Amino acid sequence: MFKIKHLIICGIAVLLMGLGACKSRFEKLRLSNDVAKKYQEGIRLYNKKDYNKALILFEGLVQKYRGTAEAEDLNYYYAYTLYRLKDYTTARYKFKEFADTYPASKNAEECRYMGAYCYYLDSPKSSLDQENTYKAIDALQLFINLYPKSDRATQAAQYIANLRDKLETKAFDNAKLYYDLGGYDITNYKSAVVALKNAQIEFPDIKYAEEMNLLIVKAQFMYAKNSFANRQEERFGQAIEYYNEFIEAYPESKYAKEAKQLKQDSETGILNAKKQLAEDAAMVAKYKALEESDKKKKDTTNNKNLDNKTQK
Image (cartoon, rainbow, N blue to C red):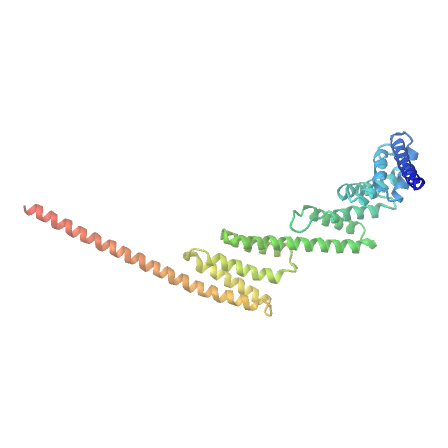
C-alpha cells in the first residue's frame, strides 16, 4: 500500500517538475535574443494549436523581423493566430495590413478575404448598433471588386446577403418599436410611418415589405384615431390612401381582411369626426347666441335704468 502511494506521489512530482520545466523552457526562450529559435518555436506551437503561446512569441518578433524575408510568413501566421483566438477586431486589421503590405503575395487574396470575413464575424445581432455590419459589407464588396473571379467571391456575396438581411431586420424592428411606443406619445405613430417608408427606400426588396405596408396603414390609423377631431379627417384619409396602396400591391394578401377593416374604421372615423365637429360648431353657435341674448338683456335693462334716472 505504501509503495503504491509512494509511486503515485513520485509520479505526480515528476509530472509537476516536467510541467515546471516546460514552462521554464518557454519563459527562457521568450526572454532570450534567439529570434530564429523563437520563430521556429512559434510556428511549432501554432501547428500544435497552442495559439496563446504562439501569440506571445509572434508579438515579440514582428518588430524584429520588419523588412526581412521572413516578415511575410511571420505576419501571415500572426494574423491567423489572432483569428484562431477569436480576436476578430485585431485579426481583421492584421489581415488587411498583410494584403496592403504584400499585394503580390500568394496569400494576399486570402488575407484580404479573411479581413472582410473577420468584420462579418464581428457583426453584432440585429438589436445592437450596426456600424460593423456596414463596414463588413464594404470590406466584402471590396474583395469582390478586387477578385471577381475568385472562388471566394461567391461566398463573400452570400455573406453580404446575410448582413443585409440583418440590416433589414434592424430597420423593421426599429419601426415596430415606434409603433409599440405610440400609446405613450401619438407622434410615435407618425414616426413609425416615416421609419417604415425610409426602410423601404433603403431596402427596396426587403422581405418584410408586405407586413411593413400593413403596419403603415395601422400606424396611420392609430395616429388619426388619437388625434384631435379637427385633424382626424385628413389623417384618416391618409390611412385610406395607404390602404389603397397596400391592396393594390398585395391584392391576395393574408392581411387583406385586417387591412379592409382598418379602411372601414377610417371611413367611420371620418364620419364621426365630421359629426363631432358639427356638434362642436353647433355648441359654439348656441353659446354665442346665448351670450348675445344675455348681452341684449343687459343692454335693455341698463337703458331702462338710465331712462328712469333721467325721468327722475
